[in-house]
Length: 281
Image 1: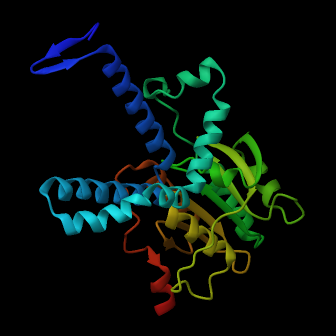
Image 2 (image 1 turned 90 degrees about the vertical axis):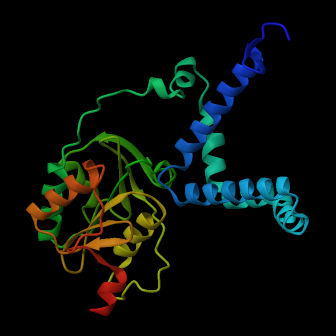
């Protein structure tokens, strides 16, 4: 092979190197697309099953190979059905990548380092003001996932965060108040966004649609959601389907800093309650 070189008993050509780099880039983009969502777990489960199928086939287990082979034969169709939303987002991102600069941003070494830590004070002050007026609010913070799919369901803003802007959005006379605000990269990405409502039967009837939507989003992504109840004026935080209820201003600041910025934070703490715990109470 022209331009090839040997590594031990392997003969590697430059085409092989380019092939590996392209596959690595493709898998990195796939990870970026799926990270922070339940689709990543489904994909990993599917890949584990496929690797098990290869091992069984290599071992010569004909019956098990035949059974798994029938499942793998419809794997492409099943993948399209399971990941239709992610495939749509991927194709849209490919279609938008028309400039040279946008192509460069696809590579991991182009990621900007040392991003500033987001100031949580505007959210705390806005939540306290809204709670005092018993005005409902729903604010979702994207972590590993930028929540782009859910942001696209509302009105895109891409605005700097401020208390007055949040109060204006959730004002009952505002056309943007009905829905969620998506926060991504320290900015207000979109408003009036539609979130998936939890189908968990253990969610008690005392929790309204805002809490159900907050729980639903955190069940399928790694997002943290701030909820202000319109009925009671209570402030809550939700992550991983668990609810931190009736938070004061100081508690809200501590929880936000813990859940948003502590990489090792876990919502399973004594003050966190699941929907089932609330129902049992």
